[in-house]
Image 1 (cartoon, rainbow, N blue to C red):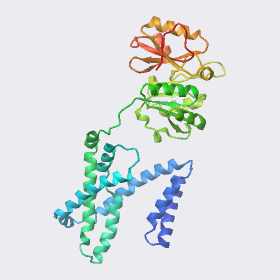
Image 2: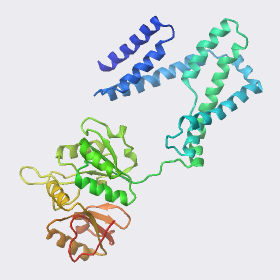
Image 3: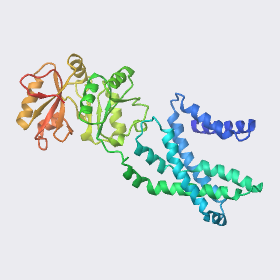
Image 4: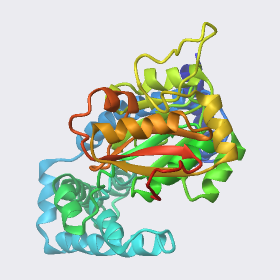
Length: 382
């Protein structure tokens, strides 16, 4: 009954406020929404989803109702050149308002211009114009008949400009988001942070998700983008542009957290682009069978121990299958070094096991490994 109770509360606040002070109901529910949005409510997302559906329905009905107040004869008033001058002035004032309000906000000039040109004037302006315009016409205020048609002209003009011009303006100002083949890492422990820093140095966007504030603060100190979220409760799509991510790495010590991440975001990442560290069940078998494995010869505990003693990520190059097999053999026999995965010449992630078995398109690449430098192996830092 959460959604019903919330809607009833909103209506109650509106009526009570309007009873105490005329026309104050709208302000009261806006304040209520502001307070609600800043409370730590576990079910706030359910209310927001309900609000979105309700808004689409009510705004659609309201536009039809307001549009029904416009007679075609009233639109003849818009033939005056001064009406179009008003629209032109609004299109000039909008960029000025955006430039002033976003000063110091970190947006580029092109981004500000794009915002200025695509923001439509809508339901609030139309609603207020209909409310006061009709009353002023009834009171026989001079030129009051212009108010409603003028506002609808502004609404129509800005909506059309936004709908038709958004894509051309985005191209003109160069504000299209470029796909950066980002890497989403679930977990921010020391091993995950080392890998995250490596991928960031390779020019990839790296986002780390964890519930541990200490881990997240350390990642922030290393200039890695972080989000505090609970995989079991929070929807990462609400926090992160998951569509712009190419790889999912689940690197927590909890098999349950890792499996939940695979399940919830499997449709965003192919199985070839989903990686996980190994956890072993009580019978000693690995429980990851639907994803690629990071460090296939070691588990999460081994990774944490090596990351504690030798917190370094290295690259070692290979040019053919025999070199790859020799490098893996040396690393498996070396204490304090763990091979993780393949970094191809095309900057793609590949699992070690598959590359070792079927080395075809990865004729040239590098092995990413954690720990101390392996002797007799030529290494290059990222």
